[in-house]
Length: 212
Image 1 (cartoon, rainbow, N blue to C red):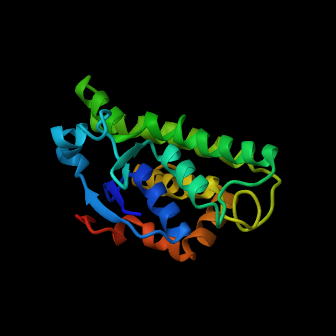
Image 2: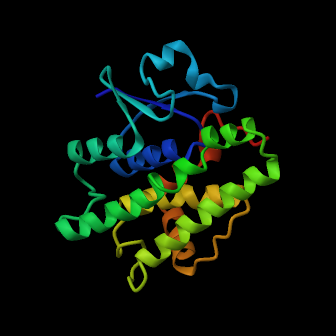
Image 3: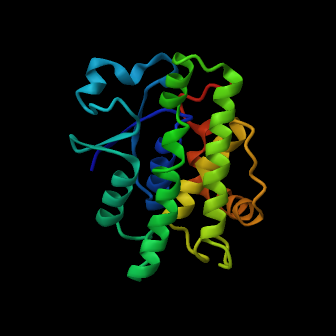
């Protein structure tokens, strides 16, 4: 199988897929697209992904888009180690946590939305304040979703989709100065980053990383 990931080092959505690929032990090649220069809007890439977003994953020539759809495909194709619980109710809880970030938090504060706010006249302080408010509300809700649960990760001692989505969002929170002092979430982050797959997926470890 030939896997090609269209990515950007700081994209939290691409970060999720990088983590999953690492957890599954899958080899892949990176094709970076610099979102700061709108490289993802180039005609060649739009032919692959009409949304002009990253990530996109080429699987033996077929193109998959949307990070959670990509992750679920890989989960079904390579079920070990599983990142979705076998129990249907628990699986729904894990998906709900992940979607709280992937659908209701991250998209409202991503680069595309922030650029739209700037284009409509908001200054940088207001744009950053928007991002902080959105992120803090999302993380607070996620902390409540797993309130009372124990274990090293969101839903026990096994890594799930919830952890894969959470870790990039915590990093994004810090970029905007949003509060991350949710003790359970911070403990999960510490445990996750000790895992080689999470460490390898970090932005600084990517071929297109730009510390500036």
